[in-house]
Image 1 (cartoon, rainbow, N blue to C red):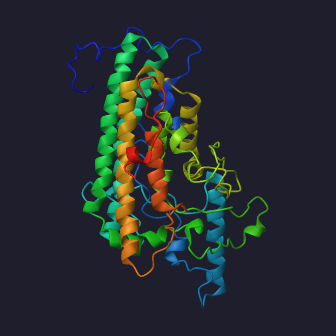
Image 2: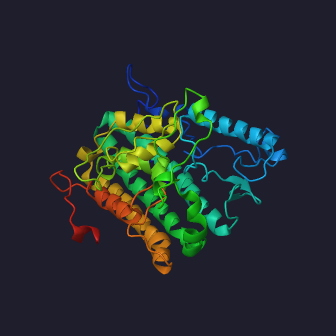
Image 3: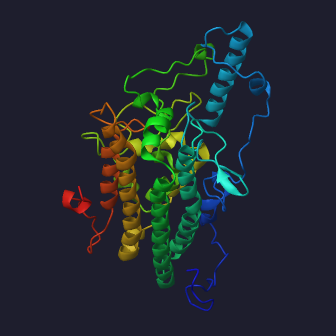
Length: 399
């Protein structure tokens, strides 16, 4: 659309532009601050994060962990205070008290305007590049959010002009998703698979991906009757990306990609709603993995996805070819994700001394089978000429 001449009919404003009919739903909020979605940075924070806490208590005293040998009573008391603060903040934010996708994908602009991460577990450039690849995807996805809003505006009218505009917007959206795929694949240029698997990935391990099945203990939680121990705590996962969820939901792919295809006989389920107990989600196969991962997003971003789900647009019925182009681009994006998992998890695991029968992702899933299944399910949203969905077979998915 950006390359069209100014007098092209698709570039001309509508005669009724800016005049919302009485009682019409305000679609402009699809990228508004109501959902903490910035028009410039999308799901990423518009301002750089704090480089240090405003409270010097923990930093100045070099806060010690309470179970470390040789701590003084003052050290233990100080640690207990900060642990209590973390639990209270988690409850207030309606998030589980665990590292999430959003926590390590919020870079600050440093190094002469270059993006760099403030907090690293390993201090390696590989770890930083791994985070920044996700951040670049989220930032490039801002145009996708803008296109979604434009499509929603046009879908209200659904006349011949609207159909032509939506067709152009969907093809542009497919191009944006194609760029996301290239950004994802470029992670290989800065992050070595063996460094990731052996040095970085262990820091992401959640309670449900621990091979020893060890339970996390929240000391002192019994002292606050309003808090409960989380039922489960998954590690940060690409499945927590609000942008990818938004693409799924907007295109109606979520009914396929969010299904519980790895759980025999299980179907889709509504997104879990975290409460003040900061429990992440039920520890059961009843809730599909991608749906459960929404509990690890900010509550505003969960509301954004809920808004998209509650205001569906008949794209599948209106524009078969353009719709399929957008879904195909999303499927290719997930092809790249399958390749990344094979490169960064399967390959290094086979080179190691021990190979688990079922490689767990940081979110607790069977890593390779899961991303391959999501890819295949995404392709199932493609439409045939008669408007029905394509039925996927192994030969069509490259399995």
